[in-house]
Image 1 (cartoon, rainbow, N blue to C red):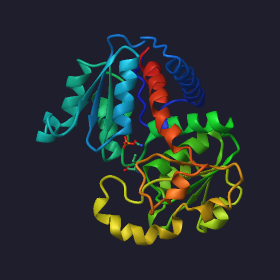
Image 2: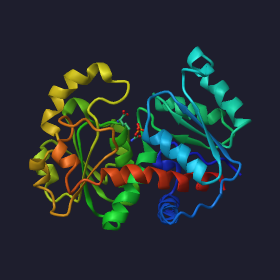
Image 3: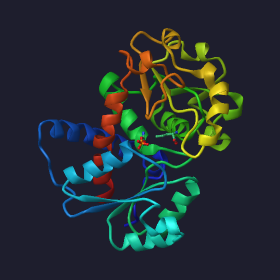
Image 4: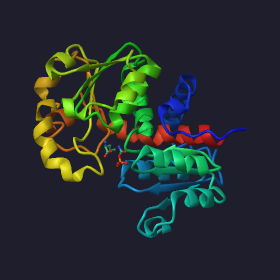
Length: 300
Ligand code: CP
Ligand code: NVA
């Protein structure tokens, strides 16, 4: 049987993704009731982080522990990765010892190369181009709050980055309408846009874009690896800030999501982030349940 990876949402079919989300709902209910089934007894997840993380690390580590397995954290400091051992060598070595590997890295090609050398499933814990694990949690969160996302209007405000690309994939797979509003200089990748063009519209005016929106989503203006551009980007992105004035143009029951960490006063204001339309804390918590379901899907 061929190994299943989760490198982008397109690694799996809509049916498979839906079954993961439904299983996440079950796992969440069980966890809340204090029921823990050790479906991944003795299984080990290796986690390689070439960039910082709070949510991704803790959700995978907790998830493995709750399912009866174990997770090992590796970072450039303290492992041979930081001393120049090639990722393709690390992939082959870890494949002999662990059952699944999560990699957070820079260029998406690094992840693809890693997966091609791995004999166990590889999960994208975020690359410069995609963040599919976050989308599993976002889709679960929307479904819990409002039901099916199909045919809903989702507006992405800000940078055409890894999260935006994964939203574009999700719009095509789950058939919702995605309006992307970015400064001209920071539009999403053309090839990824082309592949989701039936469900994605590029709009330039944030006010027009959010009219009748069911969900507004944003993310930091300078992603990990772009820290030196932060000040310059702040000026260029100010018009795309999600604030209460912008949210007043959406549907009355519209929701706000952000993968976090958030920069208050930049891409989102404090009142929106902490306000009644924001479901960011539920969204962050759902990383645990959706990734437990993903791990079971890949490993059982
Ligand atoms: N949203 C997210 O992936 O958070 P971390 O960078 O803290 O893992
Ligand atoms: N776009 C952000 C997401 C962080 C979870 C980044 O890549 O830094």
